[in-house]
Length: 394
Image (cartoon, rainbow, N blue to C red; front, side):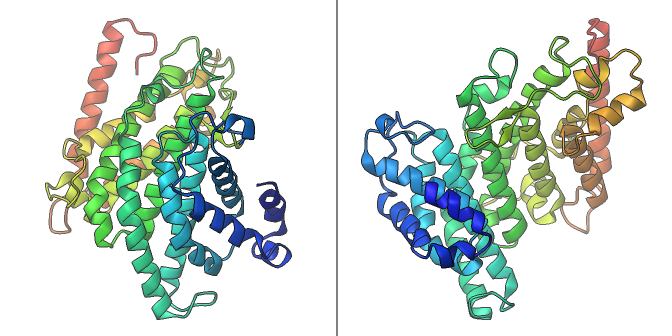
């Protein structure tokens, strides 16, 4: 892993000439030890003393090394590694004994390799591809095979009931490393699903799994919305004293920033993808069944999705607590960071209305009635809060 960290500083493709045996060694280690279930006491720092099995330690180090190198290797090397790494990485992701950080890194490696397949499939013989149209077809076939196995697993990860995600971060659990890793793991699963939908939306394997992916994304959205509201919107004591002061950041074991707000933003972005693509909207809102045998998203309506977007657009406590902070200034302060729940919610509403919420191009715009229903729900919730003397009424 230390060698991979050093090699990753050489730039794209550079390490392969300076460290020619490194990538094959990492791929071989992952493929060889992929069936090894990481020891339940294997810690996030890959401490050998904390591991019950030497193979699990080697696998953990190799996965971590690959996660560092994925941005540096070229498509040819990535495609060569795909058939060896993807099955092993999936076994790691599905292993309940593996540490959450290791499972997240394996998912990140899978996402990077899927990105390489997407690039090769779209290139169709451009510079840097592996042989023109035949390679493009081979990449699509490899992606189909990978997604057939990976999408049900990712959907199941998103759908899993993790009560901790709904609690969010607060002063009592900000140091909870397991919660941070769990949120980071869910965020990586959303990224994988988003890439799969964006790059391979026309493939039959996507249609077969879109309902279960949407159901999982919806569960994450509902849980993260509750966590975000509790920590950033409804908590009178949880905000900061300045309009411009964000909540203290949380980090996973690799230094990546994690938060309930970021998880909510990502789930909203994925729901935007699902809601605005007519092919997916047919399955989600039009009553057309998918071939998936897993959980269905049939209980999700377009007005439900838009209601969640409106809820995400509520001002945070930190943006409203400062004395003299007017409405316009508060909105500006809340949006200053960019990429937050307000922006993701606004984008979802804007994109869905622009797309018309169409199940097909021959049907009338479904988005406006759905948006009117979502606004009605929001106004009723605000009135109930006002009547109960809730200081955080909408």
